Image (tube, rainbow, N blue to C red; front, side, top):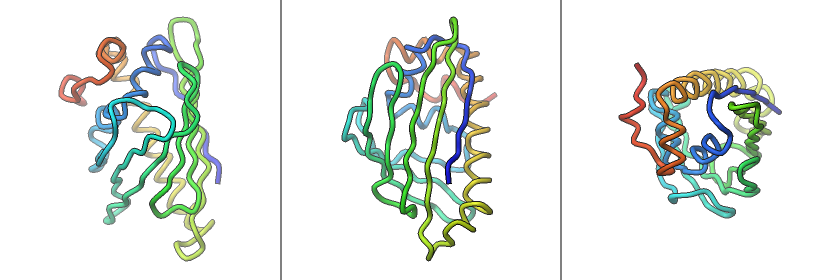
Length: 167
């Protein structure tokens, strides 16, 4: 299953990319999303970096490890799941400059194995969950831009989530 999302962010591309380059900012971005947790990561994205997250899916906590691949600042980065329930999970992030703003494009290619429901579960369970998560993420990106988080990210790479908690 392929899912694509496009999110306008009112901040310069270099700042937005810099925010995404710090895996710790996942906690900032997903703060308030149903118990999302960053389990482990390094300070900065690089090819080969492994990031581990825990995402609640209904009553079940799902652990996923991602290995970062392509990394072309400030235009593109991507990762692939190496542990977790998916037989395939590839996520590409694109960052397009649009004046003083940025368009963040995400393309996900997901597959669940047949024993976890395969394409039926993808369509009925996974796709709606991922769409809700990316809608939440789009609202958070807009909120983070409003409070100047991307300027802080450009200066320090990682920002404290408390300075950008949802209002």
